[in-house]
Image (cartoon, rainbow, N blue to C red; front, top):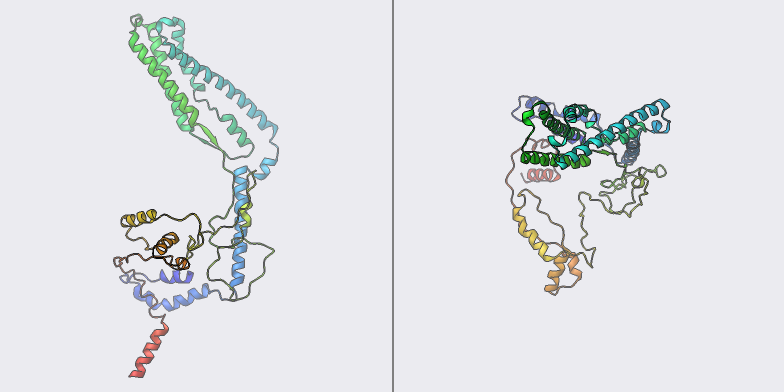
Length: 401
C-alpha cells in the first residue's frame, strides 16, 4: 500500500513541464522505492504481525499511564506530603477569603432588602446617605468574590488538575450589579447636597427599585449556576472500535504461526479484549461477552440468524423505498438484507420455509452515475502491468497470422 501511494503521487499532471522527465525516471524511482521499503514476504509476515501487536500493546499501556497521571495528579507529587509553609499560606488565604465571602453575602442581603422595601431619601438619615457612595466604592474589594476558590486551591495543592468554568461571565455579572448599586447610592446621596431634590416622585422611585430588584435576583440566580469547578473524568482505556480481532499482545502467547496461515478476513467471534477491564475508576468494569465489531467487507446484520422477534415491519421498508428519492444521488446502491420481507413473500406464494433464508435479498432498480473527470492516474501502470488474457490473445493473433 505504501509503495502504491508513493508511485501514485510521483507523476504530476500531463500539463506539467516535469511530466516527461518524471515519466522517464519512473522505473528508477520504482526501484528505489522498493529498495527503501521492501515488501514483506509470506515467510516473514507472521513475525511482522507479532511485532506490530507487541508495539500496539506497549503504546496502549503507555497511553493509559499518561492519562492516569493527567487525570489523578502527578504520581510522586500526590504521595509526597505538602510542606507546612504552603499549608500555612493557604490557611491565611482562606481566612481572607471567608471574610470577603461574609461581606459579599451581607452586601447582597442588604441591597435586596433595600430594593424590596423601596427605600428612598425620606427613610435614610442624611449622614448615612452621604457615606453610602463611599461604602459602595469600598465594596469593589469583595464584589467579585469567588465561592469556588477554596476547592480549587485545595485540588491544586493536592496535585490534581481541575478546570474552572464561567469565571469571566461571573465577574462581568458582579461588576454590572456593582455599577447598579453605585448609581443607586449616588441617587440617594444627591438630596443631601441639593435641597431641591428632597421631594422625589414616588412612582418613578418605585419603578426604579423594582427594576433594580429584578436585576439583583437575575444576576444572583445566574451566578449560582454558571460558576463551577470541573474535574477530569476517570480514564477507561477500552478498544470498542478495534478493526483487528487481536489488538492486544499477550506475552505468554508469543508463538509464531506457520507460513501461509493468515486468514483473508478477520473472524467475528474473537476473544474479549484483555485491556477493556483496565480502568482508573473505583467501580470495577465487568468483561462483557464478545460482540462483533463492524468490519469492512462483512455484513453487520445477520442474514438468517433470528427466527423469533426483532423482525422489521413491511411499513418501515416501504417508507425506506419512498425516501430513497430524497437521498444523495451519489450514495451506494446497497441495503441490508431483510429476512422478514422475504419470509412474508414466501408465505404469500406458499413457498417452503427453507427457501426463505437462501433468497433473503431483493434487487433494486439500477442506477446510472455521471462520468467523472480523468485524474491523470488511469494509465499509470498500463505499461508495466499486463493481464494473462492479453498475452493469450496476442499469442492467438500471431498464430492466426
